[in-house]
Amino acid sequence: QVMESGGGQVRPGGSLRLSCVVSGTRRVAHTMTWYRQALGKQRELVAAISEGDRTTYGESVKGRFTISSDGARLTGSLQMNALKTEDTAAYYCFVEFARDSYWGRGTQVTVSS
Image 1: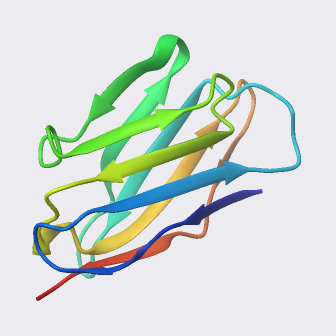
Image 2: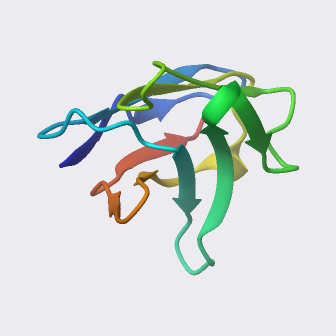
């Protein structure tokens, strides 16, 4: 099971920290990825972390968001700073193992004044 937490409402320029926890397994995931989907828009990649702590960021969040995780990628965080109204979306955690993968149900982030 994958569960996200930490969403909420924040003013532009503010910060939020999202968490993702994988339960029910002790396997090592090879990648943990955060996606987001705003109303009426396609899902987009926000950030990913994989083996060796390699990270990838979407262009729109580079320099503002930071992804981190434990070594097994079963617990992770997405630190979001300098939030903009266009960051408003449902944020999803996606965890990939060698043979299977799992989505969380998402957590809503609303950036509004």
